[in-house]
Length: 207
Ligand SMILES: C[S@@+](CC[C@H](N)C(=O)[O-])C[C@H]1O[C@@H](n2cnc3c(N)ncnc32)[C@H](O)[C@@H]1O
Image 1: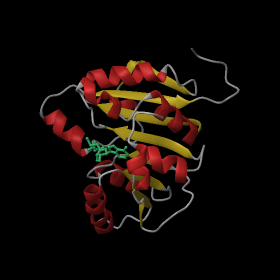
Image 2 (image 1 turned 90 degrees about the horizontal axis):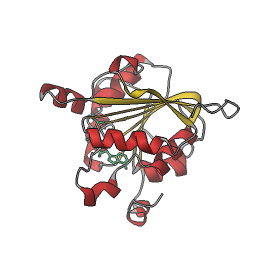
Image 3 (image 1 turned 45 degrees about the horizontal axis):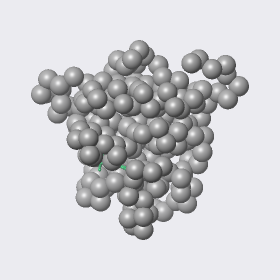
Image 4 (image 1 turned 90 degrees about the vertical axis):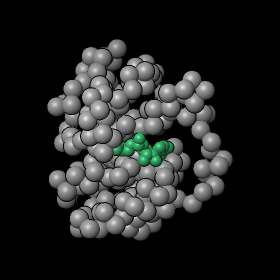
C-alpha cells in the first residue's frame, strides 16, 4: 500500500482497550467507529461475539472508552491506530465474519484523494481478514467515493460485490445508523451502501 504516511503512523504507539492483545481474531470489525453508536449497538446485540474497533483519532478513542463502560459492554476490543498499520500487525487472517467501514472521510478534493482509505490495496487486506463467506459493508454519502470503491473492488478477486451497483440498507446485517448516517439523513443527503461477500478459493469466478 502506497498512499499513506506509513513512517509517521508506524512510529506512533498503538493503544489497546481494555488491554493489549498481540493477535486479534474476529468476529466483527469496524474501522473508524468515531462516536461509537454503531459498534456499541452491534456489541450489545451479539454479547458472545468479539467486536473489534480500530479508530485513528486519539480523542475519539479516549471518548469512546467511557461510553462503552457506561453501557456495560465487555465484548469490544478497541485500538487507537491507523487500520493500515494495526491490521497487518495484530489481526488474524481469515478470522472475521464481518467488516464494516461506515462513512470514512471522503477526501473530496482531488489532491487529497490519496488519503482515501478504501483503495484496492486496503480492500485486498480486508478480504484477507474475512473468513470464507464473510461480509464487508461500506456506507458513504459521497457518490464519487462510492463509485471509486466499486471500481477498486474489480481489482480484488476475493471480494464478490453484491447489489448492482449499490445495495440497500436493509441488506446490511444488523444495521444501526451511525452518528454520521443520522446527521446526513437529517440533511436529506443520499446514502450509498456497498456490500461484498468474501469468496471461497475453490469457487468459480463470478466476474
Ligand atoms: C467521518 S468519521 C465516521 C465515523 C463513524 N463511522 C460514523 O459513521 O459516524 C470517519 C472516522 O474514521 C476514522 N479514521 C480515519 N482514517 C482511519 C484509519 N486509517 N484507521 C482507522 N480509523 C480511521 C476517523 O478518525 C473518524 O473517526
